[in-house]
Length: 435
Ligand code: GLY
Ligand code: MN
Ligand code: MN
Image 1 (cartoon, rainbow, N blue to C red):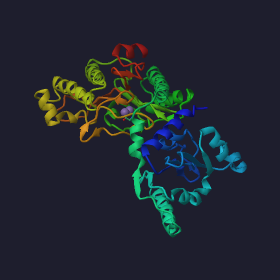
Image 2 (image 1 turned 135 degrees about the vertical axis):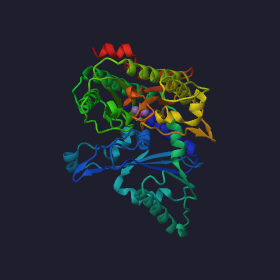
Image 3 (image 1 turned 30 degrees about the vertical axis):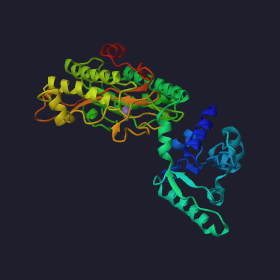
Image 4 (image 1 turned 120 degrees about the horizontal axis):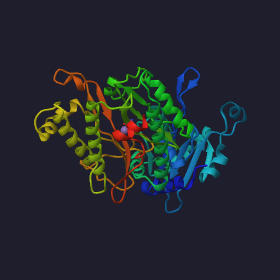
């Protein structure tokens, strides 16, 4: 059983930061894939961050303290139901959920429409994620109207609607020790998956066979899901940034780019490795690979407090721009290539993103128009790449080389720590592992 204290502490912190009013945070709905088959269920990240509760059909209500009353944490969830539990499995029911997850009160989800107007009455503010789901927005408006209908009895309607994500995103951006421990475990599983992929890959296999090895390793070690659809891209497919067909044959002389990471207990990992299908880099492949590796090293060095979010990206860009000039892909000086944006023909994405419960995690990248400073507890990816599509002014021997190297990095007091350092990325390491 997950430790419940961190979730309670987060609810308390949110209640304090709200200052006053009521927050209403639903979990994600179950979604139909086709006819009677559902997508595997995944809770809403905000809801889980504050509850630790994984069942669908649940809503969290937090009421901030006032002069007269303490803060209150309320859960609405599915009732016990012997018949449904025979078909779908165990459900806590409000009473056990209240006890296990540390709520002040819990009610059946079927009582939501009846109780919410009562809870909203006389609250000065309502904190919700407006615009996420039109049906949910409609329901909130309905409850507010129900309160409004009763104003002649003396109750007042919340005068302010605030987006609770502003507060929650800032909380989620700085990871606690508990969160970093889970992220390390998720990263460890993904590292093993990439190692296994390198050891298994042989010319003539199909990309999906390697995807199967990744998924096998994720599930075998207790991860609940891939954090995103795995990219297993041989040869030219690696130049398609979001390639997910994963059905082509792997050719001996090609590189294989794998971008894959598992989700464990609500937290994502996100690793990319690129290696030769036959286990040995050609001279050209090695040159381009070493360039991306150098760009990544330069970027990772920049991950430290006092630097901004953008510094790692700028460091990677400078190395890549020089490399593109050396390879004959770009002309002129590094500054000119950066200024003109000519490098974007071969490197068209940014060097990373926040990482956490969502693979592209929440949190602002700028504050008051300036790139924000890195702070201890932030988690991010560092993932430069180089994608060379066939073109008239590109030497043919470089065509269809696609390389990305991606690691998960934590900002610490003194600099950074890599969660994914154990995934081989040096040329010699990879070639040895693949022997
Ligand atoms: N795997 C998604 C990303 O690297 O951003
Ligand atoms: Mn990424
Ligand atoms: Mn990735």
